[in-house]
Length: 529
Image (cartoon, rainbow, N blue to C red):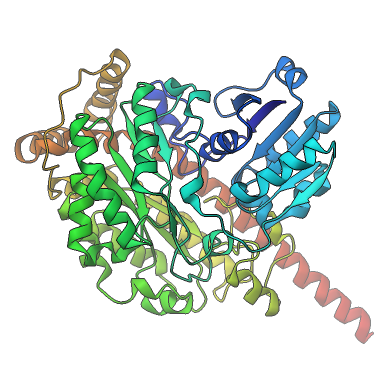
């Protein structure tokens, strides 16, 4: 069979980094790891063609070539995912749909016309699709029935299907699942609370494949909690470090982890020795009461400020996620998040308003309480929407506080100050990475950054003072430092988009509330008369 793998468009978001990627000639941050894993699981006698629509759009020749179209994506990709299903049906091509969003809300893709729904984890359900196709079936829904696959049998993703030149990072996966039970998170719903890991040999084989294909840039380990199974991750890291050393440290590694990483110095050291350079932490809020209410207890056991500082000093740059809108949250939560950011000097914070994702414990609780807003299923999972439920704080107050804090968070001088303070205290890698000549486009990017931030903008004196201080006092972190400085090019545009979108939604909501009260008053007058 000829299989056309289509990856839907991402909207502009916190993670898109459009303006920063333009500087270095890349189009997208990360590749569609799910789809190239799907291609590896399906029969290798089949033919595959991958189109990442964030890189290029498919052609009529692509549609005509395909016997079956497979589409997969996340909640933020929903609009384009549904568009692709309809386009396939318009052309009479069979279309199979899977991935995390459709697994959570299968009826949406079904209503759009999908022939096959391949839900849950593909190691179990893709073989069911293959058997159905062999029998000549033209529709079906395949589920795992609560079973979770042993990922030690997952094949190496088909990295060869990618155009490596257009991506800023590659991605690999070591584990699935998370041992915690955060109320708002859909990871435990999708993948369970018992983390399943690949073998060290599997991960090394994936990295070797990337190495053999010529990849020499960053690799993101996409696990939702890389340290969910600490025993297995330590075993893997002890094998990864020698491999990295033998290959001249070809990749800078990054991942996501729970904040209790700070309490395991051995694990921190193992990650740094294997050339991990950054980690994303789900901080969510510095308000302990909100953390307890949402069952994120792992963030309440130790000082969050000290935990972030410990991880940073060990040699890992910290990114973090923050959320406004938890139940019982007091006015000024955004300011408290801002204070936390300044105290820890975290440069990049993914800051959003709480969304009740379908079928999470939060969703079910709010549904029972009658607090889900009309159309709550339409949440897009980005940083530009109000809560999809009735919060315990006035929604207008919440929206205005969020827009104001996001704007201030990425004010250029404030952002550059955090970047500097974060990297000046970070311990450089303990190993020597071979020097690499910059590509012409990278040299051009450095010159543009120096021109915009060091000459054109009001941050010019701050930029040069901090840059020379990094070179003098901590030159080992110069590359990630300058890379983080470059990201302000994205945030300058994005903070304006967030403020405009949120303020427009607040105004629309306020107007709707006024009309509703007016109609209620009119109805009361009529009824009384």
